[in-house]
Image (cartoon, rainbow, N blue to C red; front, side):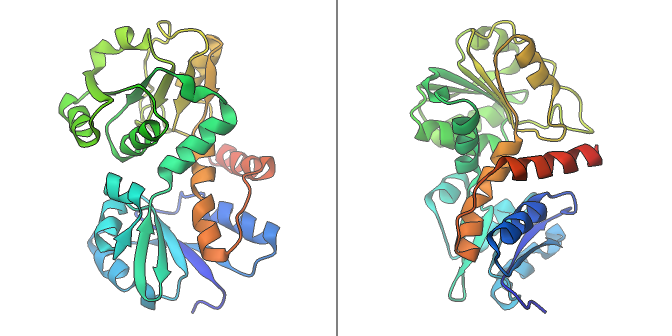
Amino acid sequence: MVTVPTAVILGWPVRHSRSPMIHRHWLASLGIAGDYVPLPVEPERIDVVLNGFAELGYVGGNITVPHKEAAFRAVKSADDVATALGAVNTLWLDGDRLVGGNTDAAGFLANLDEKAPGWDAAGTAVVLGAGGAARAVVWALRSRGIGRIVVVNRTLDRAEAIARHFGKPVEAAEWNSLPKLLKKAGLLVNTTTLGMAGHPELALDLAPLPEGAVVNDLVYVPLDTGLLAAARKRRLVAVDGLGMLLHQAVPGFERWFGRRPDVTPALRDLVVTDIGQAA
């Protein structure tokens, strides 16, 4: 029984999510009587859960892997970003109508704006990977007017699918073209799982990157990935992925609980400590 305004995160699995920690911190800091809870939902049950969401008693929720595309299909309407990506990560109710949006792109941009001011002067951005995160990043980069966006993936046809979906200035390239591409890149973004805890490292020579280039790894467990360590060794601007997680949570909280929270050093420290304990 839901007794206070409560939001939820739906995923499979979902116990690893830091979202409950983030939202409960904001609820406590702002003195709001509410809660945010995990709800593990198997892929075969997600359509039933989403179709009956209005009856569950929640004010809204977040969607994480592997349910973002299912959520897009289930909502009655979606914002422009979710529509462009075909994926929803934030849910809310308009009466009894389930509505969705996608805040991943906004979180990505807010993180770079905070940690690397002026990053959007980059003439060329290179995006590693061709999954859902890469689509959000490409949408965000296009929205900022980046002149050339190159999606690089080991399976070229997946990168080409993104380039076709978004059109100019997005293009696709093979992995072995990276040394040449990096020579002109002002921004490098890793959207793959390479370097994530439990996955192989991302073996990439950053020597071709020009001075002042920004390297952003969306991985945040571990927080200090091999890619970021290599970037710092070259004295490039290194931006971790935790800020994207924190900033993408802001719009949902504001919609569900009526107050816009701040991404503060105290919140970041809370999550960093938890990541350290979990490592």
